Length: 494
Image (cartoon, rainbow, N blue to C red; front, side, top):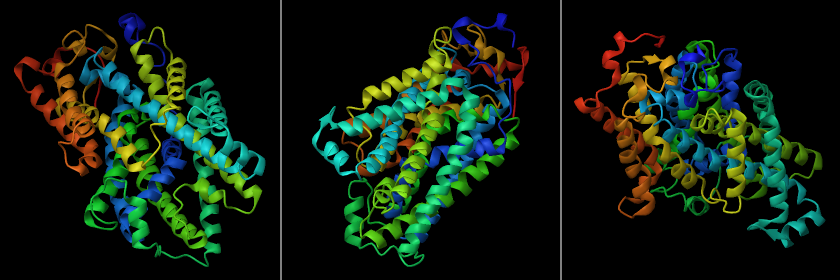
């Protein structure tokens, strides 16, 4: 790309189309191992296992939901592979060159929350290990600061700082880190599952958890119906799909480095339906075995590893879970906001600068710990915010623009993506309307039924997409691709 033709406020080297396309199937696959194989991923899978009521229900629910995730990720991943641009730049095609800062900042804010949540989860694993020592346990119980034990604060800060070391050398270092971090937790998960199954006297697919205990463990999930009922199964599938809401938006941050769409599709196939089902299978087996061995419902793997008699196994488990959680943070909650924040001030903030800002905000959120509490509630609330954005981008790319993107003009203030002073008002209105029904009304009023929040992301996607599609048909908001054929430049088309 000729830098003489770009607007300085819309371009830097990090936001430019990818020059090296060396992410193969294994690297794309490991985006998902890094994203799923974390303490939060296990915690959510184990929580949904309780909602499903039986092992068979759980696997069917997770399997069907994972196919939906696979399909959506392909839609956004293909766009990244063809254009080579990151999410905030791709969003300019539907929101306008300046309006794209809105979806970029929304995604960045969400990443700050998830960054803190995952960092806290990794620090819990270290705390669970250290408190096996009587002296450190007493320190953990008796000294507090910032609303947490002092030991928790120390571990959080240490884990928080370690993550910054990973991204010092850019995206290629991220790829190399995830290529071994993701598989590492698979090994530890299998050791954990096999060890517990042996202690339990063999593999059992019947969990044996009494119904009253299931009801107690799931009472705060906001899901209507008893565990295993059709409404509970539908809600469990919705939560699993919503868990990936953030990466639906910015998966193109990674797929842009793939050589072609076939690579993206194959990597997604192994990393999503195959990997998700197998990981959930292990989580379910581990939850059953842990209950049979310890007589408790243990949803956090660090709770299980803390009960190991062997210090070595407990240390190995804690370090593996912590590393895996760092992996998802780098992949899902550092890369995207780094690009998103850089997109706002590209001539002043680099990829690394944007990431440092994200990490700092997550650190400031720690005393509030908004991620504490029920997993389904947190996933639903965070995911609902991003639903309208995905609906708008997909409708624009596939139905309005017909998979056509003028890549060079994404970096030009006065090109076809200027819309109205750099803002596509149709996208802005659709975002507000979709967000009103997916997030604002459920959170701020009691007008919606109790179960609405579980499906907030779906309502956001649907309402945002429909409103945007209707508005783009209005003459006053005519889409610029009505005159695409008369414009020069490279067009990306799937």
